[in-house]
Length: 215
Image 1: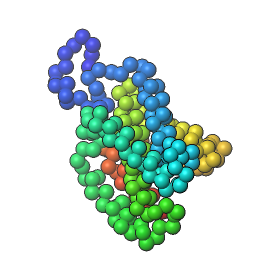
Image 2 (image 1 turned 30 degrees about the horizontal axis):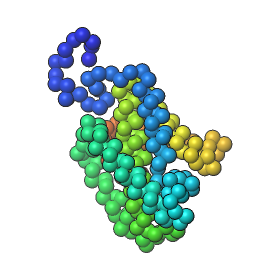
Image 3 (image 1 turned 90 degrees about the vertical axis):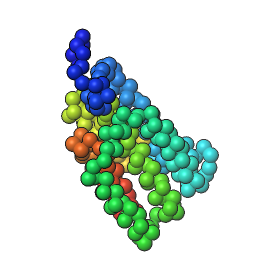
Image 4 (image 1 turned 180 degrees about the vertical axis):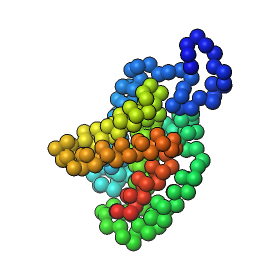
């Protein structure tokens, strides 16, 4: 919208990435800083995360962090209904959730991890939604209100990589060049899918299917 001129259509018709009023130049930086702070609450991400303040048992720690992340993300979702109309719009990709559902049913037959299988499923479901909604949902939407689409994709992917590299340096720091590049490439793929499809359905289904298939 050009300053000083009235819009010819209703303001409510503007989508998250074509807002009625452009964000200030510093808004993307603030969005990235806030995202990084929230990323620290990703359940099960750190061995000394929030859960370790209340329990020594790993399963209890993961449960505490999962419940906390779920409570926080519910509040965040309720505060961003304008974005949600695009991120969770009905489309053909909704049917893709059938894949992780089927994989969840078969998971107990090949599950080999330490945590109880039901706790793992709840943890992964919350964690995947948390990661994808915050990164490729909200952060990318915020960035898209100030930056061109390609830049929003790149910055979202770099932040996704940075969150892993900073908080999981033993696995994703630049010195571990192969997994580090892999997580950056994954971020670019997911951010590109988000820009192409607009919704998060495909991203969530693919991400969750991976954890259910290879546990």
